[in-house]
Amino acid sequence: MIDPIIHYGLKSCAPFSWSAALQAVSCDQSRELFRRSSEHRICSGTTFVLHDPCGVFSSLSLCNGGQQADFDRLLADRQGQIQMALIHFHSWLMSLRTVDELFSTLANGPLSAREMAVLKWVKMGKSYRETGLICAISERTVKFHMSNIAAKLQVCNAKQAVYEAQRQGLL
Image 1 (cartoon, helix red, strand yellow):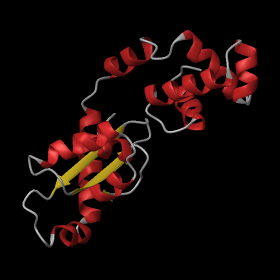
Image 2 (image 1 turned 60 degrees about the vertical axis):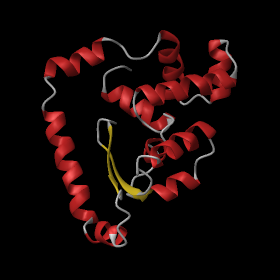
Image 3 (image 1 turned 180 degrees about the vertical axis):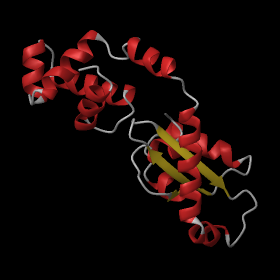
């Protein structure tokens, strides 16, 4: 989660240049990671992202290691084809997962009991403040749990977390 490209991609739905991701970075650790990667000629590129219906995040990054002047134009001209290639490859990879693997993931219960309680109250329309009062925890702790829930379910916000948990049969 310190890779600025992945971090930015988790919040994006369209292809983006690495320079756009770097402008949004505030973490020194992320900047250092990108600085170190530039020592290996990994400094300029574009990332294509995919958030599938199951909440799984995928990305395809293309690096301009040779500093080709027309790299951005070439990617822009083929943007649709590259995005479709990512979609097809992701779909193929997901098809390799067996039904047993999918049910095993669900059976392991990715959420703790406290996270399940918080998610249940949020699902019922309670505010974070109300949920905190009900669960005898602070509003800040509710936000912390919701952030962990969203990360575990690979979604971006509370509404998506409720939807994904219901879809997976967790709620």
